Image 1 (cartoon, rainbow, N blue to C red):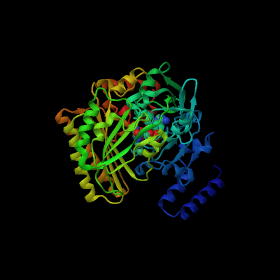
Image 2 (image 1 turned 60 degrees about the horizontal axis):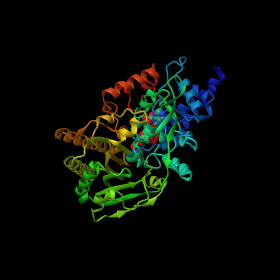
Image 3 (image 1 turned 90 degrees about the vertical axis):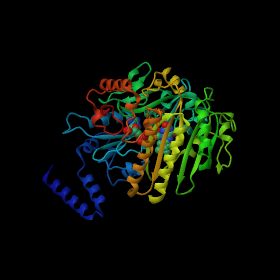
Image 4 (image 1 turned 135 degrees about the vertical axis):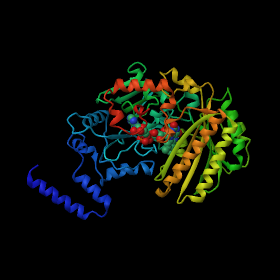
Length: 510
Ligand SMILES: Cc1cc2nc3c(=O)[nH]c(=O)nc-3n(C[C@H](O)[C@H](O)[C@H](O)COP(=O)(O)OP(=O)(O)OC[C@H]3O[C@@H](n4cnc5c(N)ncnc54)[C@H](O)[C@@H]3O)c2cc1C
């Protein structure tokens, strides 16, 4: 660099740093004036307009839009590509052999996973797919093409006027990208299977920057591995999904006093084990408490995928009386999703455990939940909320998967439906992080230990609800682990998506 320009730059840096109001400002100023070479190569390329630095409004907006406050790490810069070609270009730049060292990066779509480091990175580059968020529909093939950072609410709003629907997320704000790579449970799952099995083609940017398609005919091993395999194989830039006729649903949330938990669990056992279960009937039974409405409650979220009021499928639940509130009605999927949608600036922990449909184990979840709640009521500060969800994981998902090329979740192992349990804790105060994180861990560990002692444990862990220390990839089974390792090696022989993209659940660590 010319000596005068360097002197001017140095003077500007000193001036800016001296004017900075606080430590964060100083850090932002230094990063802006002396960006990492990984950011510099992006800034000097054709995607320069899409690169944003600490202190800039696009950077701040990107961080603010993470669902979990703990996940707002501080990358050296954020790049927001607008097409698969630009994603490919970014991958090539960040992995170029000419760099002093290859660059660490993270990928985010909706930013809803509450695991710090899964979708963002300190001291690296975050690829934020924000602008790749459209949905188009092909009337000839009946396939919807959805970009990764679309939110499910926008997908439904595009498809409903065309009379079509896809099996997507239950909440309007949840991102498409991560959801479909972890499996995806929709209200339509009992009818059409897991959401990932409704994908007919993934467009993927591979480790060497090639843009490939993965479907039943082309790169079919990659197609299977992406259905549950998280960010191990590439950056998905388009998801082509089967659609079906859009119809209004009947559903909503009915809230009852906590004293009805046992009645709900008994009804859940019969519902979950019913061999003739109505495939239109989706259900979540959950226990919940919130400082905003401080009553310990049980909720039943009914979602029937036909416009039928109070269908027979739920009759045992309807026999539970004394509800506190009831939001059920007939409405389109976009309205159902808006009711489930939630934006948060809070801190969040998800954990999961699976077990057989067994009344004793369900009752044990309630006992352990009560212990956790009592501790939180005594010790937690600020605003907080806990929800512990019981959902039926159905063997019918397997049939819906195998016919369409399979996935890696290892569901063929199960001949009986089981319960997939999710604890969902959210709180406002960073000083309470350890309290919530440790109590959440004690809850799912306690359930796991009880189930193991009673022989009701189930190995499977749902990746989209798993916490950082859990190992959902191993829980798919040894054969699936081997398969994913082989696929990762074939499509990414130098291990870019294992070492340079450290976030998410990594097959190389299993
Ligand atoms: C309020 C709320 C409601 C939810 N409801 C449901 C539900 O109804 N059903 C359900 O199954 N799950 C649900 N989830 C869980 C949800 O599926 C996961 O959090 C999912 O990861 C969200 O997707 P995302 O695009 O927002 O993920 P991100 O947080 O953006 O990414 C998640 C992971 O996937 C990777 N990734 C993201 N996009 C790509 C891509 N294009 N290519 C490669 N890797 C990528 C990221 O690197 C990261 O590791 C819910 C979560 C929340 C917070």
